[in-house]
Image (cartoon, rainbow, N blue to C red; front, side, top):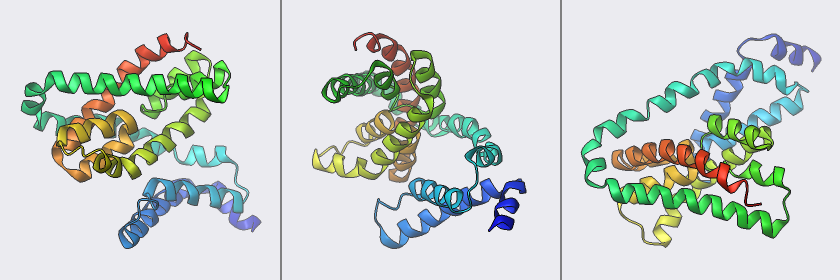
Length: 233
């Protein structure tokens, strides 16, 4: 066991390998079972945790080896502009509805967080940790630290929010009979950031484009709104 642990710690690519293995395992299970529960990102997280615990590997060792995945995060976000550019005419024709939709989503997220903090008796630090739950990790971490929250917990909350939105977004839209492709895309992007956008792109190019736009605009609006809402509790 010790030799295996030393091998993992000394290998420059072990973190990348186990992360990709976990993701592909999740892809395989989701295709075979058709169950949203087997989301590739969720399975990947569980696989990484299991391996780190089983072999007693310090998280910082894994973090150093997984830096290449963080480097790919920025270009992957920039690439979201491509489907948006292809649907530029739809964006122009529905600019008012799109703007109101994203603004409503951001406001609902922030108001819900205030309500949750009051119901569960959260401290101010815990409250501001939850405020960035529906935006991308990079923005959310910086905002959480600035407001006095815990960036580490914020990351976990953002990931959980994204996975939950990805898994349940379709069902919620069906329950409330939301069939408009623009509305579906905006809902997924505003509530579940990039992970929701991945699901939106699976649904169609229009959904993906609108979700990509929502991720960016909702992130900017949340940064502005969170600084105001941080004073409410």
